[in-house]
Amino acid sequence: MLSLRVRPPTSFDFRRFNVRDLERRWRLSRDCFLSFSPKFEENRGVRFGVKSSKSEVSFTAAEEEETLPEELQPELMPKHVAIIMDGNGRWAKNRGLQPWDGHRAGVEALKEIVELSGKWGIQVLTVFAFSTDNWIRPRIEIDFLFSLFERSLKSEFQNLAKNNVRISIIGDSSKLPKSLLRVINEVEEVTKNNTRLQLIVAVGYSGKYDVLQACRGIAQRVKDGEIEVEEIDERLIEEELETNCTEFPYPDLLIRTSGELRVSNFLLWQLAYTELFFAQELWPDFGRSGFIEALTSFQQRQRRFGGRKS
Amino acid sequence: MAELPGQIRHIGGRMSQLLEQIYGFSRRSLFRVISMGPIPCHIAFIMDGNRRYAKKCGLEDGSGHKAGFSALMSMLQYCYELGIKYVTIYAFSIDNFRRKPEEVESVMDLMLEKIKSLLEKESIVHQYGIRVYFIGNLALLNDQVRAAAEKVMKATAKNSRVVLLICIAYNSTDEIVQAVKKSCINKSDNIEASNYKHEDSDSDIEGTDMENQEKKIQLVDIEENMQMSVAPNPDILIRSSGETRLSNFLLWQTGNTQLCSPAALWPEIGLRHLLWAILNFQRNHSYLEKRKKQL
Image (cartoon, chains in turn purple, blue):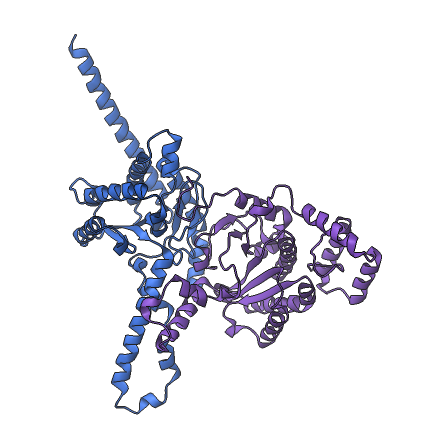
C-alpha cells in the first residue's frame, strides 16, 4: 500500500528510482490484493543498502524538498483535506467490469492519495467510505465493501503503523459486521499514538447523524445537571462531534470526484468554511495529477471567513 | 421645427418600450419551454462580490451593494416568473459583523431602506404576492432594522403564492445551536409531562424500549426547531463571484443540493446563469428523485 519498500521509520521518502517497481507492485496488488511477504521486503532492504545516519539525513532533506511539486507552495498546504470518493461504480461500468472491481481500484487510488498526503505535509485526511444513504445498495455489494475494508485494514495496518499514520474510524458502527469492528478497534488502538498523518475513515456516517448524536450527548449532560441549556453553544457541539478525535476537525479543502456538484450529507457542521473542489474524473482515475490540481486550486483561493481582505 | 427633438424623444421612448415588451415576451416564452422539464421548488443565493464589483467599476464603496440590490430584484422576478416557489438569499452573516463598523453601518442603513420599501404598494412583494421571512438571530440587529423586519413579516403573513426567505444576522451553526437548545428544552418538558402522567400507574417501572427511544432526541425534533423549517430544502444553491464554499450558509439543508458557482460577481449575475443552473438541475433530477424514493 503506502510503503511497498523498507524505509527508515521516521520518513516518508519517495525514491524516484523505485517507480517501475512501484508500478509493478500496484498492478500485482490490484489483481490479487495480497500484502507482500516480509521476505520480499527484507530483500528490498538489502538491495538498497544500509545508509549511514549522516547520508540518511542529507538524503532525506533533499528528497523531502523534491517530493512537493513545484506548483505547490509548502506554506499554503491545507492541514485537513476531506475526500468524497465517488465514481467507483461508474468506472467499473465504463470498462464492462463488476462494481466490486471498481471498489478495488478505488482502494488503490486511496493508497496513492494517503501516501502523497503524508509526504506533502497534510496532517489529516478524511475519506467518505460509506454513507448512511449507501445502505440501500444491493446486499452483495455492501458485504463486498465491508470485507474489502476489513482485508485492506488487516493487510495495510502494519505499514501504516510503521509510517506513523494514525487511523480513526467515525460513523455509526452499530450496523457493521462484528469481525470488522474487532479489526477497527485493534487498528485504532495500535496506531493511536502516531503523529505523521491522521487518516479518518467515515463508515456508516452522515453529517446529520453526527450533529444528532452530539445533540444527544449534550442533552444527556444537561439532564445530568453538568451544564445549563443556556450554556449550549457552538464550541460545546464541536466537542461532542465525532471529529473531536483530531486537532483539526474542520477540513480546509473538500474534494469530490466524478463531477457531481453535491456534498451528499458528508461532514455537515465541519464544512462551514471549507473550500470545495469538484473534480471531473472518477475516483479510481483521480491519482496524483488530480490531487495536484485540487491543491493548486486551493492555494489560489482567497479565504476571508466572512471578514474583508482590505 | 421646434417640435422635432420632442418628436424624436417620443419615438425613442416608444421604441424602448416596444423593445422591453419584446424582450419580456421572449423571456416568458423561453420560461415556458424550460418549464416543460422539472422546475426547482427552492433556490438559494449567496450574493457575493458587491464590493469587488464597485472596485472593478471604479465606483464608491457603498454603490456595489446598491447595484447588488437591483441584480437581486431582477433575479427574484425571473424566479417567480419561472414558477419557483421559494427563494432564499444570504443577506448578512453573523461573521460580517466583524467588518469595519462604517461598512456594517452602511449595509444596515441600506437594508433598513430596502426593507421599508418592501411595504410600499409598487414593491415586488405586492406584485407577486410574496410572503417574507427574516431568518437569523434577529436580536443581533439594531432596533430599527429588527422592527422593520418584524413589520414586513406581519404584513405579508397572509400571502401564500411565493415565499422569500432573507437570511440576516444568520449563521448555519448558530441556527443549529438554537435548534439544539429548543430540542433539549422541549424534550425535557415532554419527559416531565409524561412522567407526571405515569406517576400513579405501575407501568413506568418497565421502561420499555419504545419509551427509551421516545426520550432520546430524534432527527425530526431538531429539524422542526430549525428556523428554515418553513421551507423545503433548497434544490439549487448559487454562489456568485466564483468562490466554491458554503460560508456557514444552510449547512443542514444543503446535503443534497446542487451547488453552482458562476464566476460573475453578484451585480453582474443574469438570466443566463440562472438558466444554466436550472438546466443542470433538470439533468440530475430524475436520478435524485429515484434516490429520494429509495430512502
